[in-house]
Length: 275
Image 1 (cartoon, rainbow, N blue to C red):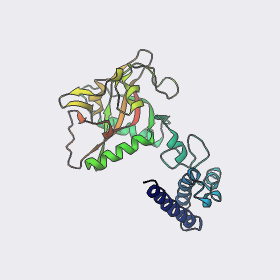
Image 2 (image 1 turned 120 degrees about the vertical axis):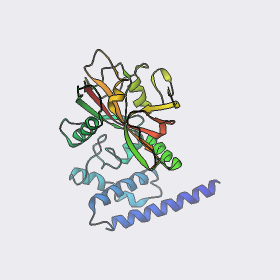
Image 3 (image 1 turned 45 degrees about the horizontal axis):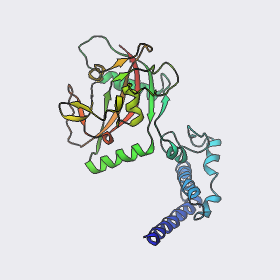
Image 4 (image 1 turned 30 degrees about the vertical axis):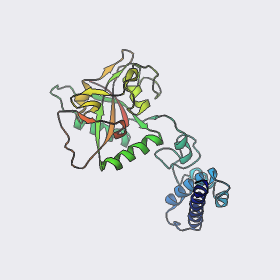
């Protein structure tokens, strides 16, 4: 078994080295961003297996040079390597153990997009309309994305829909730098830190009409009924999530959307708002 594993590793090493040589030779010369990102990924693999990849000793700084010359965007964590997965480089993405929060600038395109979606989906008999004050983007760890993609494949869930989930938030979310608290009774932070694998006080599920699982809403005004804010913050807090569903899934307008597994749902944004 060990010999078979080594043989497979050697074949993978040879293939990657050949690909690295192919790229370095200019196979994607007219696509510098693609070339740099591919090299950044290959360099990362090469650093882990440096005895198999002599080619990377000659190309390891290309990604860093591209960042310095502003040909590509830098990693938000190390600020040295090019982004490869969201806002992180390959190395930092693999090191990330928990979610990262990044505040969106008011008036920026991402802020405006999530705000427009939030308000357009808000359907309430109450004439009062919410006002969005802050938005944090949630950057989940690599293992969360891997599990979510595996769930989509296994369940043949080819579609993703945006839903909203709210619960008790006892911390002062939004009043300081973007961070999650450690209170066991703070549902919002427990859900974000565990990517919906754990609710407040260690509970694993919601319980509702469809049994144990996770309940969210297409209509954020319905999720708002479950929002509880701390007295130390002026904001209510809601999580915008992406849920994997099958293509024939019928989305209820006035009811909750149920999924039985945390692997089906991924937190995308934290919205702080007032009503």
